[in-house]
Length: 330
Image 1 (cartoon, rainbow, N blue to C red):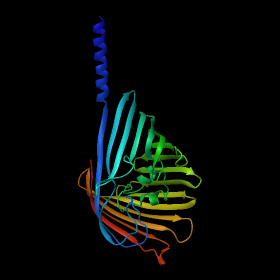
Image 2: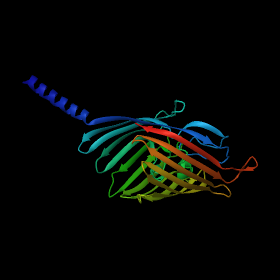
Image 3: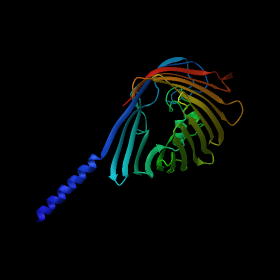
Image 4: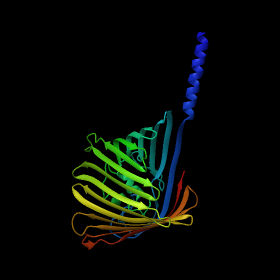
């Protein structure tokens, strides 16, 4: 009798374990995105979405349109609408095969979610204000055409970039198209604590978003913007105010995407204006992405920037970058 009970228990445990395994999944994904670029000898800063552009001598290069990535995403259904998930994403530069640091630079977090309510997460993740800025950039912060975080976030960064270490955050489910993201990131003696939030609305052709982040009175950012899909064109608008090391800065971006036969046209103009005279930066981006498939595309982009001011006794001159490349996601 005892042996029979043990056999029944073992069979039940095996069935539960097998069911749990069947409801778990790990996805491996990534991207390789490279372009041949031509940059002039302009002296204006022209940091783009890939973070590699800058004032430089006239040159040809093979550059990353966006940093290469290799990621692991997992989710487990715990039953009753409860799920556990994780994300680990590594970044690298595909033109030379070098790893970026930290190794899981893009993200490293674990998350627990309840269907219809939302989730909580812990680890390294984008700060909430990043998401509206991203969604109102036609290039999604990639390529020479993108206004990049320099403009979209008005130079605001935490932990050297757009992700925060030691984060504890909460994301809501969508309620009538509205989602909310709250997060705090412990400085652990490296910096003051960072606190941030966003609210987004996505319904039909409409998108609207706003967000803020703050480490102290000398370092903070707030932004708001919206877009509307007219089907023949999707215009976007974003306004950002920041204080970086005590200096107030403002940015306004007007942008659009245009659906074309098996392609997407892209445009943006952004003006960054720090406090003070004769120091604003105006950036223009143009782009064309031809979709060979859902995962592969050919691209041509232009980014051009003109900053007021002088260096080495001369007025800063316009910097322009042209790029053509291939992007493949898996």
